[in-house]
Image (cartoon, rainbow, N blue to C red):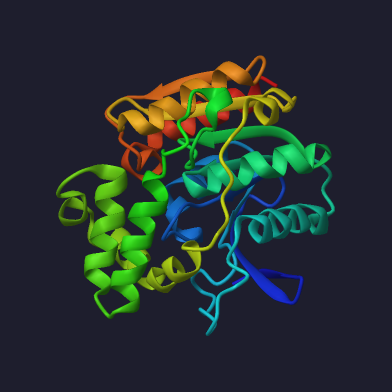
Length: 270
């Protein structure tokens, strides 16, 4: 399994289509490089060099005793260092959920590394400049509850909390076994996500992004994710929005054909 050594940590990734344009993908909470299994070969066949990262400590990595480096700023630095280490110039960066938040911060801090930005229902909160409320802390509350359950030994209970936070009641029970296995393999990372120090999105940050940007969201997703898409897309000049039919927050694996077509269409048009 390939990896690059970044800041004392091996950043593992899956790759396909080595001869094409570079496309780096970053998964969401409780995910890893396998979260993009349905994207690898189809996007490689469309002439992209596809690299799906596992952010530090996610499978096949190991969870450390303390986990104090499992923070958004660390993930952003890792992704930026990974892109630089490739030596391929600017890349297209795709992030899903928490990975979308990381991707936004890479675009904010390292715009020279990106030729395109694709955000699939980026996780996080909005500040007041984007219509958010100071008390809007749904992610923090759900993630704290989940991590407390996992720390106490109730892994399934904690994973159920996260699944229902993004997919509604019964989401964990409906989830295919392969996706459950990925979540279980990364359950301990929730202990770090309690203190990931994710800042809310601001209008100033979004408006400063000049990288060509595509937003993807599921037609049947929860309103909180739609709110993020609408606010950020309205603030990033020239951004595009594509709705994935029949999908919820798990759009890359629920509807991969439409998801992949939207990604390819956007990137080929640049």
